[in-house]
Length: 287
Image (cartoon, rainbow, N blue to C red):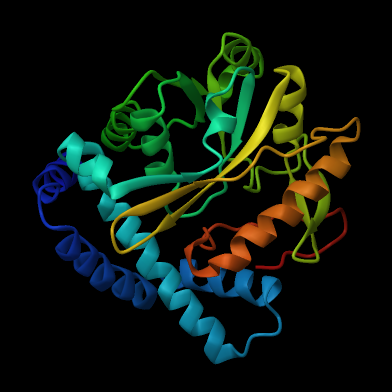
C-alpha cells in the first residue's frame, strides 16, 4: 500500500457496495491468474485439508477464495473511511452477544476469515466495551499507518505490539478490556505445539488457552462471514470448561472447533497463508 493507494481507498469508500464487490471480483480473478506463488500455496492447503475434493473442485474453491480475499480488501475502503451509519448498516452482529457484554474478562477467538477486520470494527462500533488486539508492525510505513488508524477507528480500541510480550495483554484483560485474538496462524516452532489440523500435524500457538488462563477470561468465538449486505459477525456461545490444565489438549480442541467453522464457509478462510509451513523435526516441507 502506498499513499496513492490510501487515497484510492478513500475515494472508493462512498461507492455502492455492489460496485466495490464487482471490482473485488475482477481483482480476485486477476490475482488468481497472476499471483502464482500464492495460488500454489492455497491449492496445497486445500489439497491437505480437503483430500476428498477433485482437482477441479479445489481449483473452483481456490478461485472463489481469491475473489473473497480481494473483496474483503477493497471493503476496507468503506469500513475505514465510509460514513459511520453506512458501516453500521452493513455490519450485523448476531448470536450470543451477552457473552461479550456480561461481567468478566473475555478473549474473543477470531479466526482468520477474510472478514476479520470487519468483525473487529463491528464489535468496537456496536458493543460498548473497550477492547484490544495484538498487532504486528508492517514493513510498509504507509500501510502500517493506514491499518493502525483503520483498526482504531471505532470505540475504545488498543493495539498491542506483538514484540511487547504477554504482560500488556494480561494487564488489558484484567483492566476489563476484551481481547480480539487471531491465534490460528503458523508463527514458527517457538512456543508452538504440533497438534492435528485437518489431520495434519500443525504448529499451533496455544495462546488462546494461555491468555484465557492468565487473564481469568472466558473464550467467546467470533466468526465473520462476508455477505451480500456486508458482513455477518456471529458470536458463538462461550466455551464451557475451557481452558483446561493441558495446553496441548486445548490446542487440539481449538483446531477441531476451527475446522467446524471453516467447513461452513471454506472459501472465506485465509488459505493463502502457509498454514502448514513449520514441520515436525525430520519432516520435509509440504510446499
